[in-house]
Length: 554
Image (spheres, rainbow, N blue to C red):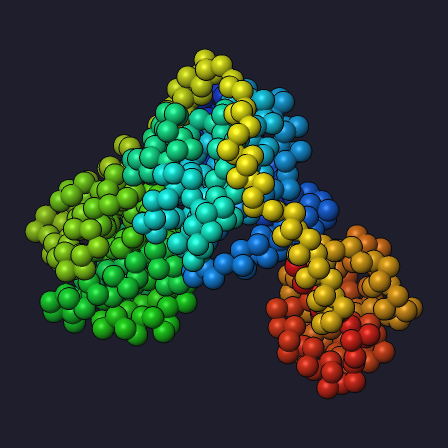
């Protein structure tokens, strides 16, 4: 068998890492496997990775797609919801690569990686690992309790839409039209049950294969020595909490955690450690002492944080799996979570953790106390790690996927659905109208505000503005370097960088000298910074007008 994996983002993402470890385990079982992510990222830890984004054209097209998606969704007064509309820029490349595979294995395909329409053009079986709810909804990654995905979406309450044929119905119908050769895999029983209830997949078998982690990476450290090393109290029970965007994403349940902590008896006996974002303001409400480790990308440090705690709390409201739960257990730290969604599969109540009554903060507080003061805590700790080593190792998941691949290869390819209600619904939602409106918006911002969206090739207009002057890029960060690459691509010469930080003046970035603004009074300036409003004000105070600069946007 030859398997080709595709996942969006870069290798630092949770979905990408899970897919990568599966790829490596498959190769260990002598299966021919290739692994593609979108963005390259230098990391010595990972080998045998191939990349989809290898050209400036691809990057510019993805910028454009992202902005178009934002433009379409701006019509709806959405509140704190993450939507994707299923458009991509690597369709042709993926179709070409699929010709040499027996099976295409998709993981997380959003952020402009792959268009839904391409699924029906891949003339091979498609195994698709669902890592959230997006594959069977009209665009939301988690439905927040809404069940309209069971029919055909539309009139989306998450977008405050009252229109039947809205953008969610359009996205849903496109999925309905193109899923005929998809073989779905859910990473938890809860996710599988949700997928099975969607009319997109009610004629398909949804397999359940959980994520895996490397228990050699997430390993247990001595709690006392780690607490001493990290400056954590030795005379208190330590509670850990952490997630990506731990405080900003309501789905992660931080507010419920605060409620639970405030219900603890003898709060002075506890200390909270957290990771996953800037919790400086949010943590003031906790009511107990705490240490915030911020964003942690190093698994070695993360393992130490898990190991330092007596109990890890995962108060998520909706969770497709529960990666942090398995990581914590692998480090010998039992977990308290709600008896719902993905975590309900992982924790054995009373043996490796505590499953609280659903969304009840008082029972979560009871669970924290139960674990932290358990008379046989060492046994709980040992069982937690043993559960991960036995049931969540990459080798086991590779074996399950190998069986699935063999099963899928015996199933004949299906034909695309007949055009009927699908086409009718898609016609009602006029995507071309949005595309035209988007282009008008981009043009208006260029003409009126001096904002240049770098995907909109205006080489001739920009050169006429430059009018033979020397060129400077204001901003030496990552976007400034990207703009340099784009200007080179458009054959627009660059002379220097500008930065307001005096300590950088005279230094070299990307082979170009960094100047002060005073040295570049007669230059044409490309503003390439998220602080463009402040920089524009500085330029205006120094006599620059709209004909002397553009604001680079992506």
